[in-house]
Image (tube, rainbow, N blue to C red; front, side):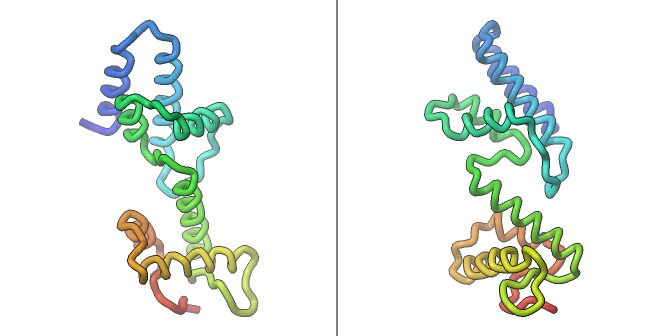
Length: 159
């Protein structure tokens, strides 16, 4: 079963609980909208979401009483995360990737002749190296960093 049909099945089960509920219909519509947008985007592509959908996502992340089925549906959405911190981490990873692609080297956190924004990206990358050495970097984050176009785990970036 492909990702889309598995998601469709989850949503159908969710709606079958109370098919006439406008609240369920609206929730399913929003969830499907997010699924379609995220499914069509590449993993490192930044997607501009409609503000109403951004608000809905924030509400879902902060709701105290999501049903198991709602949680399962959201977890089936490509790129779904339960926190803005994780989203920010991935956004910064994309910026580091873009920097490496453009400049052919990792960003530096210190030194002379730094490019605009480089110090911030270099500091972020340095913190990822520190987390790796302290063994606090999650396997998922390490895998994402290992997919960068250049080595990232060096103490001194290549110049």
